Length: 86
Image (cartoon, rainbow, N blue to C red; front, top):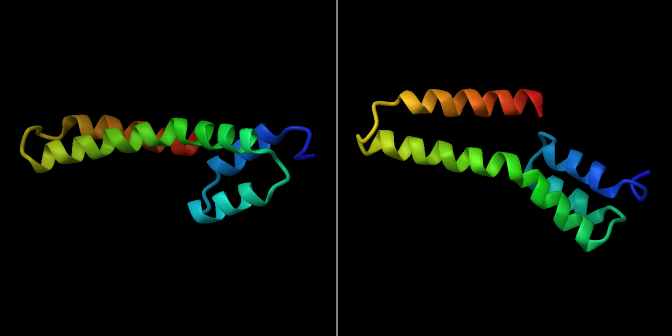
């Protein structure tokens, strides 16, 4: 089944809530090619990496006293919703 739809199942593994070390090992041990592996990694990172960068930027602005903290609530809301629905 994995051989017929490697990108679909590989991306599902990337979106799972298990630690990254196990996700990477699982994808590497699957019977898929390197191109499909890279596509799964890019698709799996396309959602969470930008949200984590935005969260880090907002936290740094708050810690530096440049922002009163209103934008952090929007970022947290988007992060929570994307975690629940993805």
